[in-house]
Image (cartoon, rainbow, N blue to C red; front, side, top):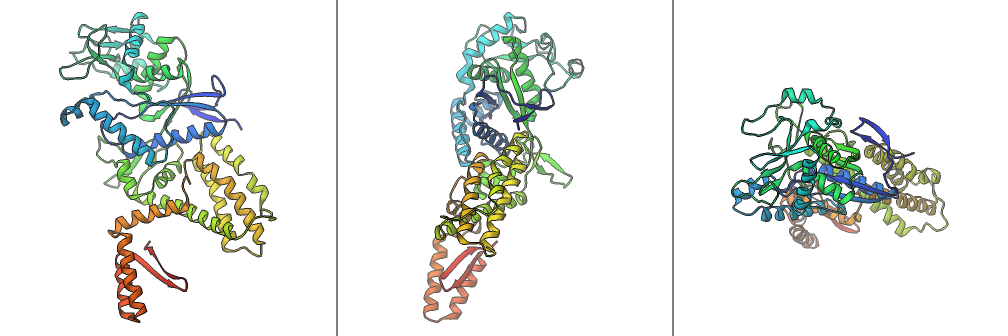
Length: 492
């Protein structure tokens, strides 16, 4: 099956045909760095990370570009509030963003351009638009794009130009020819960052930044442009207008947009988008402090990228339990394989196991259908668990050969999804550490109490032994004695 992508530009699924195969150029709008990133920002970074991985898995030579918006009204306001420069502010939050991406286990894009590094190219781009009659400078030093000059305006969002004009309003202080015209260059105000230009000192508008950074790194026409669906209008619509007016060529060929992260409404009436403006957000750091990164990724990928994701603590807990199931199954498989050699064994359901990559590809080729892909892979964990708990007379070598074959097929495919990237021991230690932090107890404190209990048992002081066991239980720690010794676990 050929990879098919849902293209917002055509509102349908299309066969993916790169401009210059096997090379693929992909640009994704990045974050505006004035604060810590929230879970809503995690969604596009996780999904486009999987798309990047999958395109590489399919043999494409991908150049993935994701920018940092490091000059913006919000950045200027926040820096002024804190009494620092915009550069100091953005450096802090670019570093924080990269730390969050590393904590999520995401690959770094090939190019991560900063807007402020491309201002000369933006000035040159704007000059070209003015020369072609698509933009105009005002007496105040601002430059606007002339929306009416581009016949294809609205082709991405489906918005009608006449209707937009009828519903638009213009501030009387603005020197626009039309209320729909948008800023390419903004004259600087006192105390704001500024750059030289033919129109006076100022800074670029938001939309021009992405047009310049994308075409500079990928060419005037490239394959994939991505971002959240809230960017379709006006940001991506404006990118198309100014880019195609400047070059006379098609801009991005496939437009891919992910859905929102929604939170349950406080009044129980339904769902509302997670956003800073509504104040109903959690930072990525907040979530990863309490849950494993792969739990968050599993939750995201369990919903198709074009649909909205309902985010809640219950759903995140369920996702973490699912990832724990995968890792504990892998751990049991590894232990079995360490004790039972697969040499001479024949895999059970070998044909079915051999089809795992093909079934995975069928799902992913259908517009990156990660829920279907993960569902297909999950069934083979059940096969492994069934063999481990009830071999039903199968030869241990055959069981081992089956487990070995399943493991060899699953791990590379989960890697495409950015999951199962650690050893089971590393994952489970992380889960335990978070649970102990939640309970307010350390491993050292647990071990000290267990040592006291061991001494009480050796002294046959059963009452003290029971008291210490009950004290641990009150703290959320279950103690189990067996012939092999005493083990503890966190109470579910």
